[in-house]
Image (cartoon, helix red, strand yellow):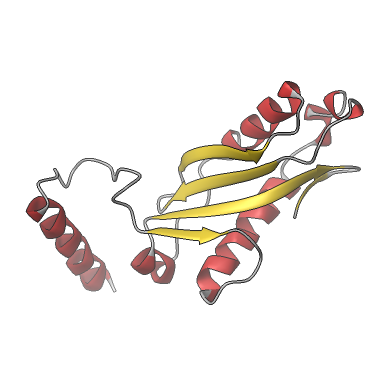
Length: 147
């Protein structure tokens, strides 16, 4: 398997060099192979499993105390897309729909960043994607829940 990963890395470096890019630089948003999971179902089972594990980690390791006071204000459930790189680092956090309360939106960003690094992609997932975008609706009741 190590040989196969090395061969794939060599192919990516050769493609980057042919495109005039320095292969040692991180992938830009435009050049990365991206997987998008904006629901809970996809033909790629590895992608679905990764997104479920990511959501579970966030839900189980986040305390509601971080946003309890802010959630007493009228707010919408924020819809957030998190782009995760193959090494488990976060590329970006973007709000599709804000909660309408800046304290909640800031807390969501902190909750995501506080758990970095996330699990690196499995070899099967890394074969297909450099970055995975996961979109979830965040709800705050007795716990932090991602739907």
